[in-house]
Amino acid sequence: MVPLVFTGSRPTVKTAVAVRHHHEPMDSPYRAQRIAFGTMHGKQLQVAEPFASVLAATVIAPDGLDTDQFGTFTGDVRRVQTPAEAARAKAELGAAALGVPTALGSEASYGDLAGILVPVHEELLIFVDLDRGIEVIEGERTITRLPPPRRARNLADAEVHLSGFGFPAQALVVRPASSHVTHPAHLAHPVHLHKGITDLAELAHAVHRAAAASEDGYALLEADLRAHHNPTRQVVLRRLGQRLALRLRTTCPACGSPGYGRTVTLPGLPCRACNRDTDLVRADVHGCPCCPRTHTETRPVTTAEPVFCNSCNP
Image (tube, rainbow, N blue to C red; front, side):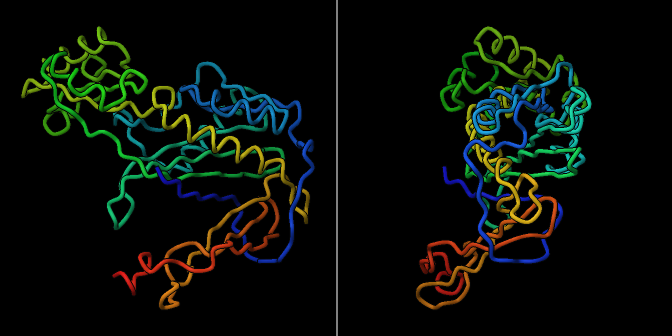
C-alpha cells in the first residue's frame, strides 16, 4: 500500500512567512490531562501509547457513547455529514461525556479516487481543545484493495472466500444478497444484518438467516470496516496518533499555541523532461490552528518523472 498523506487544521491560513518551528523533547502542553476519544469501536487503543509517550496525556473512551448515530458503513444509519464534520461531532460527544475540554474523533471513508478509479481508504483523526478554541486534523489516504462482496448459500460456500477476507482477524458483515435492491428495509433489521463475525459457528448462523431472508436465497459477505474489527485501519490510526501527538507538542513560533504543523500540500512539481507542472507535491505549508502564522517548506525532490506528467504521458 502507498500512503498519500494529507493534513489540515482550522482556521484557514492566509499568509506565508518563512520561519523554523521546534519543540523540546519533554515539552507537553497536555501533560497529565485526560483526553476523551469519542468512539465505541476501541480506537483509543491505537492512539493511547503515542499520546502517553509524546504528550504524557491519558486517552479515555467514555462508556456508553453511540457514535453510530453519525452513520455506519453498512448503511443501517445513513451518513449525512462530511467525514470531518462526523469526526468533530464524535470528539465533541466524547468531551461532553467525560467532562473534559480536549477530545479526539475519527472517521474513515472508502471509495475510488476521483477520476482515476483507484480504490482508497481515507482516515481522519481530529483533536479539539475547547478551552483554547483550536482544532487540529491529521489524515492519511492509503491505496487499499478491499475484497469484493461474496455470495454464499451456506457455510461451505462462505468458507471458500474466508482467506481472501483475512478472516478471522478481519471480521465479516453478512446480509441478504438481494436486500440492496429489493428490500432496503432488511438493512436496518437486526435479524438480517449481522456484524462483527469472527468465528465459524457465528458465520454459519448469519449466512443461514441472511440467505433465508434474501429473495434469491443467497447471503452477501463483506468486510466489517469498523476499527475494532479491521486490522488495516488500526495500523493507520496508530500512525495518525503518532503524528498528531508530535504535532500537538509542536508550538507556534508566533503565538505559542500547540498544533503547529503541515496544513496544506502544494502541487506543481515540474516534469524533468518538459518542465511543465505536474500534480505531484512540490512544497508543504505549515501553519498554526490559532493564528495566521505559516511557513512553506519545499520538498527535497525537485523534478517529477515524465510518467507522472499529463503532457508527456497523457
